[in-house]
Length: 117
Length: 113
Figure 1 (cartoon, helix red, strand yellow):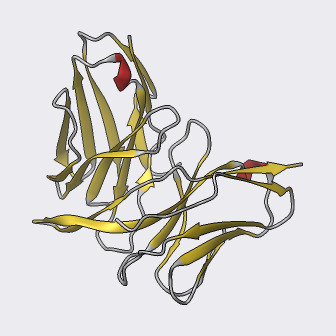
Figure 2: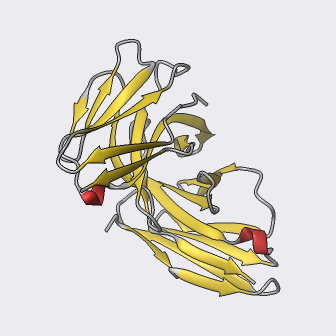
Figure 3: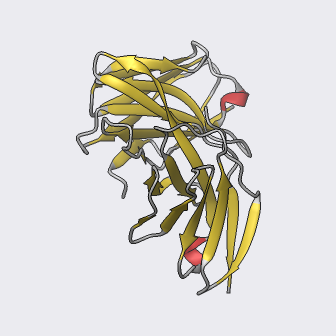
């Protein structure tokens, strides 16, 4: 598995942009970068994913460096409800069954983002 | 709502009990997953099913027995568990394809007494 490295915690002021970094220096050419977040006692929530190009959706933006060895998740206007653990994950194939290839997400410890009023 | 429903939300069981966790999705996904999240630990993948076929068993003890009768339903049968098995058990599903995200349920909080 391509491993990821994230800071254990970050703080952000409400209304400001939150920029969460992730290093994945051993990523392979066909491996996607995924971002999830988990609010206490809930299941992980999908945020965004990308392969090479920068991506944006209604929740966040994902900036991937040209060499793909690192990425940054950007929450443009953080709110108190964005306080959560954010996971940066590289998805890898685990094998092929009769229905096609299967993939898994290996979660690390993530970054605890605390948005302060 | 994520489209993945897990029941029950909370479960307390003794070490000699037999219980089952249920996961249901009507998103049309073909792959389903069980993850375990113990206190202060990262999520651990347990099992993966693809079109009802188990394609991954991550060295899970036999006291955990998964069942996938169809692509919409996934069960985790539990028997003779240990207190250290207490955790949040999360189900997820995904469509086929390398770029497809997983959708998680909100989990079952299991306490083994």
